[in-house]
Image 1 (cartoon, rainbow, N blue to C red):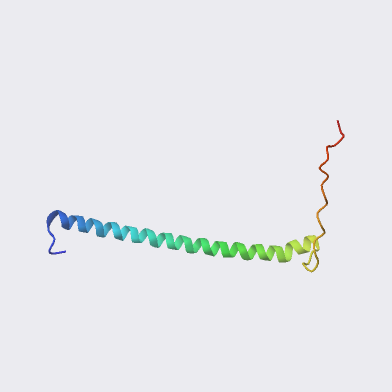
Image 2: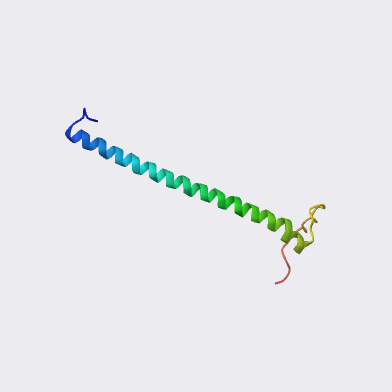
Amino acid sequence: RELVGGVKRRDLAQVEITVGALAQHLENLDQQFTYIEKEIRDVTHMTADFVQNTVRALTGFDGNRKAPPKPRRDNSPSNTG
């Protein structure tokens, strides 16, 4: 840095400041992504717990048998006119 004078020295200082600010922003983004990933893991665990406990208790479905097939829909026009 000492070999560079005047305007170029200021330019280098400005680049250093900009790079430092960008590094801080990247660190903040990394922390936010880490928090989001943790939240997603927590919601995933809560969802699995809900399915394992609440849904099974409400429906009586324990996962050991297949669900009944869906009823077939009649696509013919109705005579309700």
